[in-house]
Image: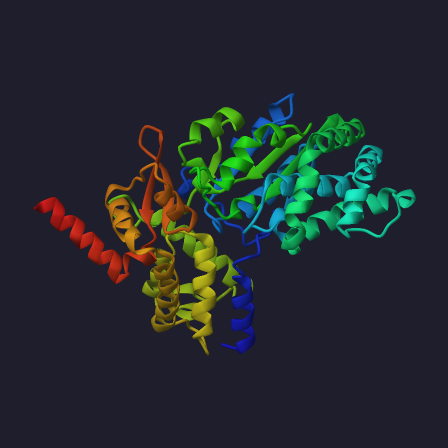
Length: 443
């Protein structure tokens, strides 16, 4: 088969490109994700509530949250909503160093840009004028006070978020200036939102702030984290917008000892789990394996609709199954393994050796992500299928060394469980830790 076909297939597995709502390669995975349904669990609350709602959405990075949120956006628009969606880390925040003020400015910027024709920007213009001298002192603008209009208001908020993301040297100064006046900024933004809603059908407005789950956890000296400071200490401000809002949050926050506080402030947080490819007894879960093969097949089928996945794209069925099981049901992992395997493929089919190269490379990355004292913790979770409420385990969740799965039992109850990533289970340090643990139990 041609190099052009391999190139097309390679690009079909871009691991960082979420699918658009009507993309024909989309695969519905809810039955192998514990019956997860974003329309029901987030969408219905927005549609049915007569008051603004503020909800959280989480899951491992790369599990498919952005694809699901884009589908929810379309679903809400079909119900008559105006939806402002933005990926916060693309232009607005630095995920390695983010604070609440960064999120507030990002929301302000995108709401203003999307609704500029539905309301007067005067409240935000007045807020901006009130901060003019301090902003000029930061060399953020050369526009004169008299020339502040709609266009410059939008551009200056964009300038603020861009500077926050790209210029660490002025980041704290900007944050201090905004933080002092954050309440008045929220009031101005809500005045803008309220007028815009009067010009929308049924006043339906929703904002989706995506990729906030990528904010890297930083633990302070007092034991609290930056996640606590953003999503708990500032929950009043995050909930203050006069419209429906969804924020993505790091999965480690949901399983922290602040979990009840998160629920009290925001209600139940929906979690998008992995695609389940093994049962809790480690046997293969055939429906999940079938779903992953369908996911691969649809992307390949765009360019080779008549090719057999098991014999023409891969050299044998065991090869594709090896790739799927090694991914742990993590969608982005599937994409990355596919692209790396194709790097070692000059002509189709993809061989077992090429898949093994991809697995080995990915496994080495996970080995580097695990601290020496964490191998025992990973081994314990692989046996117990549960995680203690401990900072170290939450960090392993955030880094995808530990994965979450859900399934529906015979009584219709959703069961949650965890396991070490399959790639980690093949690392010598993990096996040694597992052997040591088993010897200790039998002694």
